[in-house]
Image (cartoon, rainbow, N blue to C red; front, side, top):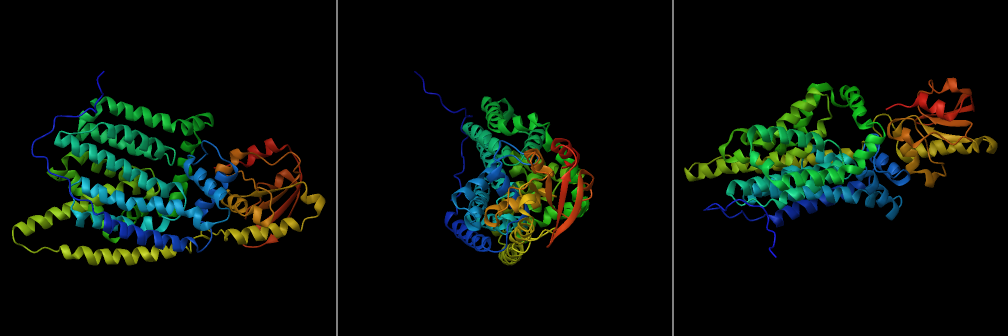
Length: 495
């Protein structure tokens, strides 16, 4: 019997040993990062997307949702089950997963030939990125997605480096399939990443990747792991695709339109990160030493242009920043080495003041994240639940028994559900976005306690309407339902 061996190419002579990994300084950066984000986890209330993950993962676990794959909601639901109402433990997985990006950034620099200094600069740049500083402790899909994209990049860069040296281990491609599948279950934009990488691979190479049997094994593994959410989407008419129109509509408000998104995509990298990303992209595209990875730099640029053209969110490309940061740091290292060989002094000392400025900017954003929990005109979760519970308890018992609580938006419904046990509220319903498919209230509910600013579309379906709450968000009592819930629900559903 013969033992199967990994598919490799013939080793090339004179392969340079890999640089040492800067594990201790990266560990120090990660420790400070975790300490800072853990500390602010105790401050403020739930972020609006975070409370949505918590509510649907806790009360509506499923293989998919209208606007999300299942990983983030199920993780949030599991943490709530383990430690009810603990903001610290709910957010701890997101903080630790985000911190892993610091090591992945260092590994990417190492794979590209970066010395310990370049690895540390890359890890620091990732840790102080403004987007990372904002979301690293929120348990949301876009928080969990970034380190997964970085792991995907690291496996791909490693294979490309080995292939260029003639020693490529194709088992890396199978691991790549696992990462793509898990990422697809976290946020579907990895499909755009894969399409961009494949297209740029065909243009720039190495096309030999497509001839490897394990590359097709990679695709198969990814599809198998992603199958549950893909099947859910197919059975529900691909609502994730319909979300594109919602994103386009919201872009002018959230990002300042296409021009605002284009600027934010760069600024989100941070002070040090923006410089490294821009220089790293240029070097990946044009430097001979980075030729094996040229298609990765091109794929990052393609996505940047694609999401501007399609009015995507600025954070959709954040996961690509790791490899761009690493390329930038290593490219600056090469400049420093060339100048040193020629006996010239460079400006390498600028990296450390830039790093210090990055730390200060990141610290301000971390603090600012605690102030955003009541953004977009939504009150803090406890305040909202308190106001609604007061209105609910004030109803006559006979009326309350046949009254459903409905949030005008999925955010309001999720905030109420997150505090339902604490404030004695029934689970909320909402016809909005991900909550819509959870269904209408029970047929015994003849009345609705509606939480929201605009009850106009509900008024024709009930005999009477009056305001019964006067908190941060108005609360309305609608009595005397005029038609069956299924018919009513279909008329008020919206993304």
